Length: 417
Ligand code: BGC
Image (cartoon, rainbow, N blue to C red):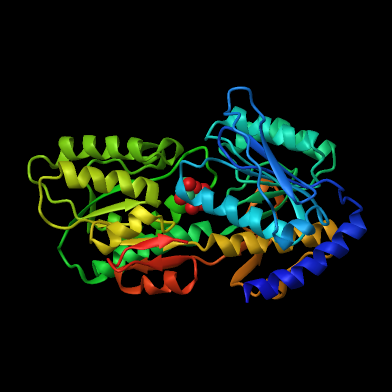
């Protein structure tokens, strides 16, 4: 099914390359490591790895490339794909899917991961501009740090798709993501439903909150979606945030870092729960933070009840925790579909096609075309394609297997394919 779709998209890509005249006679270039190791496939039959950065390893290898996709590499143009880091699991998947799908559709790609360092991401994007990319796909580490390089892209007339995280700069033409507010709402609503807060009467549940990186434009959306769904129960005292740390800034986690989340959770547990106070819920915005929180609960929580912990992404370690009852749910976002939507959009942009909701018919993925919710600067709406997230618990893990992107082992644990 996917192959069929890619086949259809390939022909669109070829038309696009004719229209924009940006094909190249070289091979494909892929930069795939945080250390910026660049791999060049020349004429699709051999590749030599060269270190783009002096400090990077200089190991060279060759590879026979018989992939049919490589034969058509560069037919559609050159795409710069800038991902934030390989240290957070999902971006490895995003990078791989984007790279794979763009190549299969006949594009040359430059893929970089910037080790969660904004200056490195600026350099990586500048290098892409120097390499004459035709379009940039960027998942920002810190959108605010990319203003200068995005202005450079605009001056060079290179269109930008803000991928997953919106960059607040008008050089961004389109935004592809999931409905981020809904992600948070699903987490909040899950808590309300699971604890039946509506019928809680005088019962009080103790809760703590861990949110995401303040530099990530998504993080407040997740937080607001969840807190809005729970606000009435917080106001009524049914949910009691024992630490008193409720505001986004107080609960945010730099770089979504697991160890940062772990340390804050340990501090909260020792300051507020060491006396035997029961902790019932820990609202976590995503899986990397949920991992730190659940480690802290396992090692430092005095109580013996199981704590309801939310998450987002479907990272392998968290799915294992869900099977083991350590984490309760995750909001799953199919990033392979996010890559397919991005590919279709990029092809339409390069072909100069009209872009509106009808584009969704071409990829057949549950997705909204939203021209109202996001702005790159005040009053400047950013047309967005927002995919639909869904809740995964112990009871519907099979849905992940059914995507074809995960395999369930004999032990019942899932691994990403
Ligand atoms: C993404 C989440 C992810 C987080 C940390 C956010 O921008 O939307 O899926 O968990 O970054 O990587």
